[in-house]
Image 1 (cartoon, helix red, strand yellow):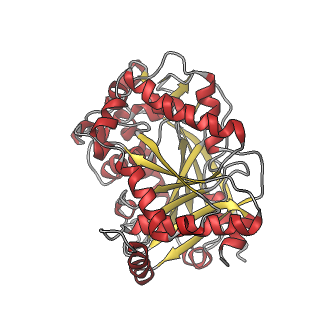
Image 2: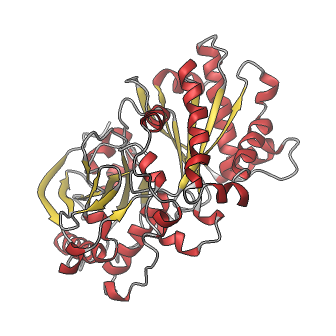
Length: 433
């Protein structure tokens, strides 16, 4: 085990460099932002720095200066989320922590200790935020003894989904590499809240049901990283095809495989007959013929859910599970997506929430959530000193955050890492099923 220590030597607030940002109108949340619990989503980019021109002092200066200019474009990140309705106070700025690690980056990457990753983050991952004012973005830059660096991001899931995070990093790295913020073409920032406008008052049962979906009382949850190489994924896709006409995608095959083992572990641990529910986060942007949505910020995803009878082993064949998950995503067709937009979207979204509320009112279902970051091009974020050596989504998550699988690509792009957060016993049993 690596004795890993990080010392913070500076705490600053990075504000937009343009004084005009202070007078911007409040930025409205989307309806999906309002429904998303106030919790922190995180990510860490690791860079091995070569060349004498990139000293720690130079790197920190470039990061902070370019972030200040980035906030002239993506100004909501500099504000505060208020009353679950809007963001304003854009002169509050982004908390930025500078820190020093006591080991070389190469030594740290040999161990890949999940618990140690939390020391490289500016906030605990997936912890509940109970404040009325929520900070959209926090950053931490940690310099290793060799000069390598880890850039840790933390931000409120009230504003940040996967595509929003990509948009932030893409603009920031473009400016850090020398572009002036006025030359960075970025339009459609608030398009999401126009298509999916916020409610003046979200029903309390909607909010409590969504919290139940994300959180469960404090349990012994742990996070483990499982890596699947290209050969294993190819073999798994062939097995998962079964009687299906089309070969499953890499993520579909892995999702079905993990769900199958999750249910097998549940059968081994208890005699419960409650159904097992798989929930997939579906990015709405590429499914809608609205190009500006790709550069909008905020949560533009919704949940595709399907259920399997845990007691019926014939219905939990791998290809059957993959079919269920694929069909639940395919239901996001033009008709359904249109029904989510505008004021009519409240009714369509409310239908799913009411179904979930009914499930939770009887017995909390056995639920497993999936989110894929494989299409976010995380390994392309070059701030001027090369592409990342490794990307990690989080460390050890909060004790009441449950049953989540996050897929990330490996550096070569051919493999996939499955970051798995489950109760400790279920992971132990599932690895042996």
